[in-house]
Length: 353
Image 1 (cartoon, rainbow, N blue to C red):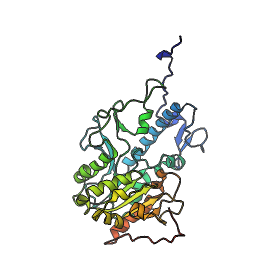
Image 2: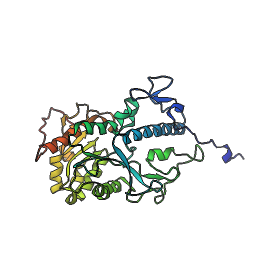
Image 3: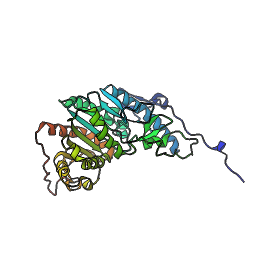
Image 4: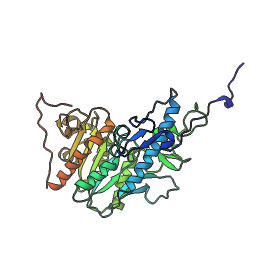
């Protein structure tokens, strides 16, 4: 009778976290391209073996995350570990905060998708366009160049909520699947809900609650005005948190923009003062082929006016395309006293979701 010994199992794949050794480089247009073919983008499908492809992608993404972090820190931003005061050697969740967060009169908070890396909007945009366009880099620079009041910036981290003890860092579910295994055919490491989680940040809802309950009150001015972007499933999380805690934030949260595919938010809005705020000071940017900012139907589903996100390909591309329009909306709210969004009147033969 034949049996397979462990010694006969294939070793797990290894790739260096070095772009040049992976066969790529960042060109002078901020694009990641092949060294052999300067027009070729990153190639995920290097093998029919999915495990090999996944491990290679994680090595590539590690390089890009490092590049983004270095450039973010050069853009008057800091890494802040949560819970606040946690040393880097202890389990923590990193977020980005601007260097002026303690003195700013207005704060822009970005809450992204629950599977995305810190500082990344869309890996597709990074691969096909530029690193800056697909990450928060262009977003930060746009805020700094177009907002006369120089608002503070807080980039939440709802994606990297798993603590990888072997690497001493927080990772996404995607990265967790790519971590080293005993054999190439071994299952991923089991998640220990105590050892691989950070208190107060065990899931996206806890993380968002900690941002509002523990971070903003301790790091910002007492009466700082707040604008919030909720991207993808971050939108319902924002809506639910504010609905449940509106009495604490109704004097500070001034406007909300959400980026969405087809998420129905009606049950998150409820009734009362928050519902009125949501109708008056919130915009939903919906996937659509119409030019960005074009009014769309959907107010009944989202509880607020809906506008085109300028693309209808994949949800993660909403932010790279629509964030400028979101920022203009925030500036409008702050520039016009008593600003209110009026119900968009859209004829039946006009643009629909």
